[in-house]
Image 1 (cartoon, rainbow, N blue to C red):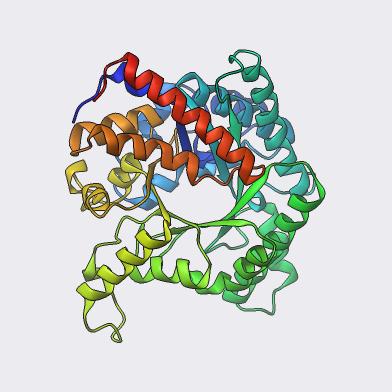
Image 2: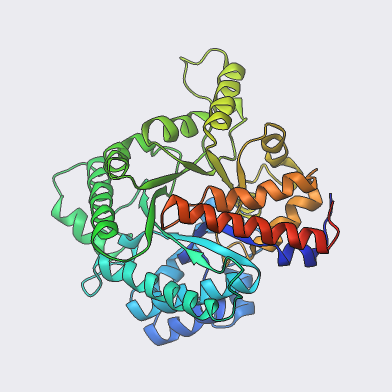
Length: 401
């Protein structure tokens, strides 16, 4: 079902899967690169769109190349704060009221920037934007809010950042898998302490990076630690690997949400010889996810750009997710790298899939309900109720049925 773009733009929205280092303004990247002496393939927006940040990519590896440039300009507190502030303002300008920017702070750390300073800089930028936005919003509207998610990396090595170089150098007699486990656990311990001891709105823990060949099980200690301290958890899973990866994220890492979940239904990606009835395995997994209301953070444009076999959006499993009444929220993944917005993602979904007015409302409200809201559950419920009231008022005024 198609909806007026004006309606989709005005809807209160969320973005729960939003990489900070993949979502900066292109003009800001160019300006910061000049200031920091970072060499870019081009210093014009058109040139970078042609060479790096494209509408289509050959595969995930090409898609990820742009992060080498974005991370290179983010190794100062001032740059991180600016990018975070601008991200919040850009989101609110298109009706996104709640965001959860995620990034790997260890990718940005160096001799001058500790993890507290990296996360603190992002938090300052987001807080500043929130304060400005609140002055614009009537008191009876929900207003803008945010939470930060810290990402561990499934795979990393000494080339990833100055911090990783130092960490791997101090563990030169350990195997790569062991060092990755240890650096992930250090992040988990840091995240718990920062959440406990500071006012930084750090709300969740994530596992990102290359999925195939780097199982989530290696990060079990990290997730056990944040789980024990009541931190919310999401995991990139089912993006390049299959249902088993999603199951592992849920059962071994206590995932509250799943990033992407693209190959949830794909029995051909089940590799274990112990699973004889693959169709039944997938059915059981779908029902388990549905019963537990484990939300899927769906990123349509990003999936189209990184998975060659999905050459048209109609091949995306979103319709099957909807038909199975799973909890879904639409996200951008990377506003810059994917050249998209939440409104664009809603347009793409509603123009290509059978989404009635009730399902659209669920898609929107799921984002607010399943967010890792930074304050109490009672406050979250009040915030969500304000969102629902606003949505229904807008729906009635535009005669959406």
